[in-house]
Length: 233
Image (tube, rainbow, N blue to C red; front, side, top):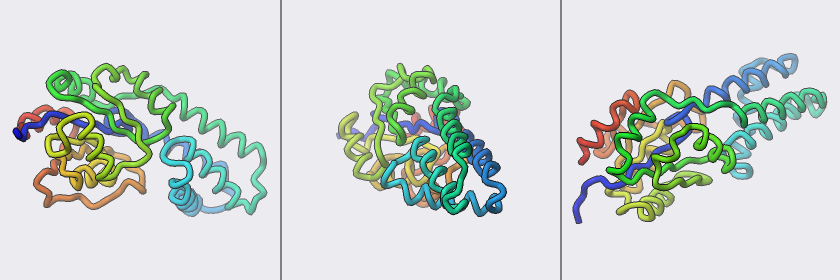
């Protein structure tokens, strides 16, 4: 069987459009609300712990983040958080769910150059409604042959999706900003993987760079993707 590339998977948040910056801004607002109950670093640390605990219950996305903020507010105030603060947390979550989508540099150009020549698949985690909203508002949806919104990203998930939408992981490339979610498991599935770092990365998405992997590449931005695809073949 020929080994040329036929399928390219793309992460969405912080690969095609801005995402983490809105979480950081909301976290800053949350920490300020609770400033009299502890140091900023301590409150942020407790929020991260809550997010880690809650991933298995609420999954990835804004709704889980909002619930984790409420849980943290209850924790740091000993259960005495004023209803007005809970109201502000909920309002902040709703604001995040309506924030305009800001595509990242070269995203549209890269997709336009590759669409029709390869099968393009959006593979993203997070809340179904929010990810569908962002894809629609981004104006990038027509470039994709398929969209997969998954609860998590693992070698098994990538293997299944690249089998479903192409010729298996061996002839697929995954493009994303998260080493933990987009790169390491895609490589483990047998795919190529292109890491496009973002200036902001959630702490729970950090992982060691797999520098020794033959199918791993690191790009400065999506403007370098088309040349990489040509190199892979």
